[in-house]
Image (cartoon, rainbow, N blue to C red; front, side, top):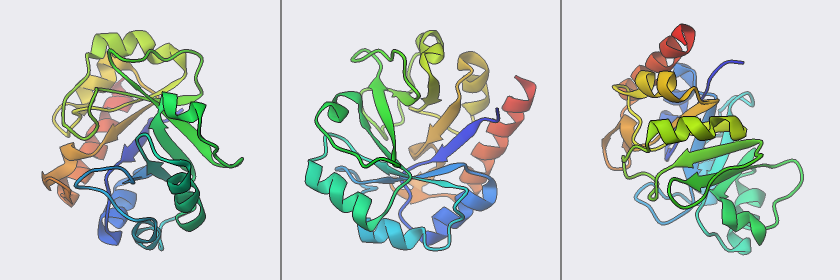
Length: 197
């Protein structure tokens, strides 16, 4: 199974296009407090020309049900991603995947389908302990996040052997400003590491 690469924190159609052309498998849109936050309408418009082969991920954190409903209705994501405990009280329609986020030192993944493993604060550029992450990689399809960049993603893949990798701030020229060259470099480095793993 090939490595799943997700480019997160996108806001504009040009960035979505750059991610798709570089070979991303998923694109993430943030609907939580962040410099990268978008509205459901903005996310929908940014994906207007995106291939159906690329997953659209709605990224949240402790959202009210009303926000989930609005995002699902307007943006029509393939996936809803939020902290694992949020799913205890949220209703997500059948047909929309759920990716729980487990944060190092706070929650430990067990018997999951696809899940994210990252640090305490999303989008902060802080890496998790890769050896600890490796110990959880067998709990399901782990998508490794937190502090990844074109410079360290290959090392992370070889250390953790995740199902996928997720990057946001590591492919930016400034907070919230995606750098298309860095997106390409990240995916190129990830694919090279995958072939050497």
